[in-house]
Image (cartoon, rainbow, N blue to C red):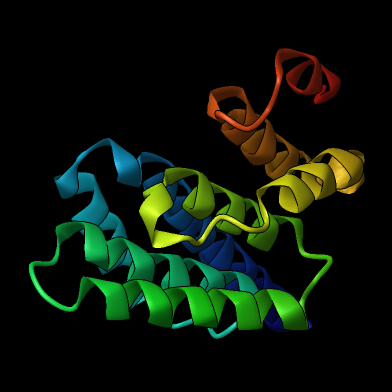
Length: 158
């Protein structure tokens, strides 16, 4: 029984640390091309097949266009289609909404992938209080640097 508990605990901590690394890398990805590449590589190395991990992988596909020389439009389309599909299957997942909001905020307007910013922002604000501490911290950190949130909206995230 103790061995089973230790095994389950180890798996949970391993997944948790991978998710934290992925979140931290994603938060820094837009700061430089090197950070973008590091995030893409980390996302590619993830073996998880859960919705959030797949959401980060879709974001990595979109970000590939930032550093690619060819087929940039196809990369964005592939990643955006995947992200939309994941969110459609998991519409109440706050982290997926955060990923989409951050992608849409940072993608050039000419691309045209910006249709969910208001909905995702409202979703984050309305569901913030229901999240665990780590996710609250992640959402708040994102919102504080986001261009979409007003000062009053940022103040509601405690």
